[in-house]
Length: 342
Image 1 (cartoon, rainbow, N blue to C red):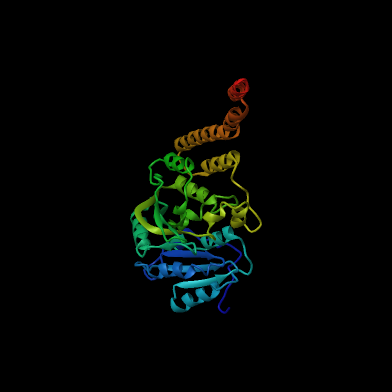
Image 2 (cartoon, one colour):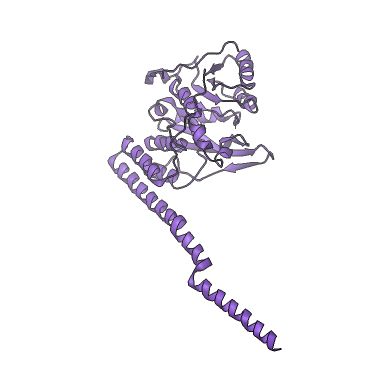
């Protein structure tokens, strides 16, 4: 393909004043990482082109696709000067493709858009307005709806997470205490805040780690409107979760560290707390929350590995079950003796 450039292997050392923006330049960079995404990519890019606020540029990072993805990208680059297409010489793995876009951002704000997701025409306008009026927040997103590709059914997501709570320990606790889609990672974030984090790290589920790291530093805002759409289809990450090893392959082409053990997750969260730029009292509160989380996880692990198997064994082979089997057998023998006597 023509006009294809490789993404630089060296991250750009962006200074804080490079993110100020101006009247003529874009305020926001929207990074679209993609690999063999011809099935839904055009819809995603069209949802960007239909935005009411046009103060953004789009960088599409193709991770070595061998389908019709390059052709689709070139069509948008040709027809809209805000779109730029970059192609990696080799597949770097999804995590690194995401991270390079964030590291090389030179605008005040940044957003990821997955090739199979959509945003409402007012998404950029609403989120930028909130960020511009609230210098204290690090990220602004909206609630997300799920679009099931096989049926066309739509349903909403609302986990009740207090992203904008005043205390860091509350923002921390609400995220670690429950499983959630982490779709807020696709909100619009201040580039200066994002580039101070570890971005997406080399363990499964580090999108949650990134959200926690951002929330420890500043409040996040989730607008109540459903302006983001997460498409659920057989090739999406949500489906890959159920396949053994598929999540590891998504996070890095050479494999990544799993996050299934409580010990590893606890160490990750503990490191985030120790590295966060927060008041010592808030740090202690976060540590107390982490200790409570560890206790809850330990109880759940005990139930799963000891209590439930023991109850199942007792149900099959325990004293009460043996007594019940003996009584049933005795009744059966008694009936047999009576039938013979008759």
